[in-house]
Image 1 (tube, rainbow, N blue to C red):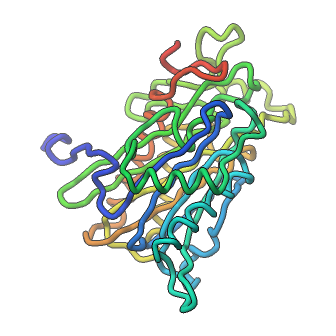
Image 2: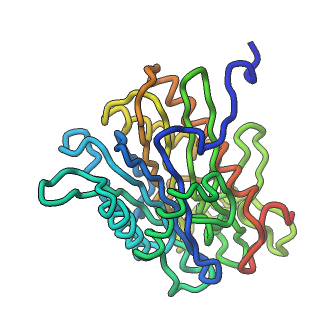
Amino acid sequence: MAETERIKEIGIDEIEDFKIGHAQDVRGATGCTVVLCEQGAVAGVAVRGRAPATRETDLLRPENTVERVHAVMLSGGSAFGLDACAGAMAFLEERGIGFDARLTVVPIVCGASLFDLFVGDHGARPDKAMGYAACENARAGEDAAACGNIGAGTGASVGKYCGAARMMKSGLGAYALRIGDLKCGVVVAVNALGDVLDADTGQRIAGVLNEDRTALADTEQLMYAEMGLRKDVFGGNTTLACILTNAELTKAQAGALASVAHDGFARAIRPVHTSADGDAIFALSAGGVSVSVDALGALASLVTARAVARAVRAAQSAYGLLGADAL
């Protein structure tokens, strides 16, 4: 049976019980992307990068009390951008959505931020107001499936081993597949030290430029050539993703799914999970469809890799950085 008969591409906004919204400061070159799950979703997380900026990730350990979260916020702004989570909390509390604490509800909002301060205005950061606006846009259904220079991908870039002069513009990507009743998709903000490849063809599509900025070089080969050097690599990195699925998962299984999905990063980003990256993947399960967790992991890896490629292909040249379509 052909893949097209078994597997169908769908829009990320076709996965029920999730709403995606974006807000950005285009001049400042930063933004945020929220995934709302107002009914609550079982959640897990896997942080593989060694320079993370995260919020409420300890809460997602299987042994901890809270089972469901109500939003995941991906943002630029480095650790400053975690303020956008406060906007989601305010938005949800106003609507009575959250963990019942008797006196009030406490929305459970997890988040992670990437470093985009070297692009645009380093003083522009996602804040509470921007996070709230992203939630409003999610509720309104505006640009839910948009990719490129939007939301958390507004100031994203890739290929930074040789510094800002030779890096390229990246952005936000989304990709989703359906097999029968199962739906699995991912939203990803690609802001890697390394290069990005099309995982289906092996083609390098974005990354570090050669010295005259006319073609792509190869970050791994450049690193190998300088193996003996303790080079202070450009530190403005981190790729963030959030998996959405209607599979029935436990909290432990959601965490395992997030971990396996990092294989998608490894298929599409080279090198990945470096000391200058804070790579993190969240997994959200709305439940309803019983599946093999191993098959779901393989599917999540595939959609993650394809979303990474879409993020760089959709990104437009901006802020003095070339997009993939400029080569």
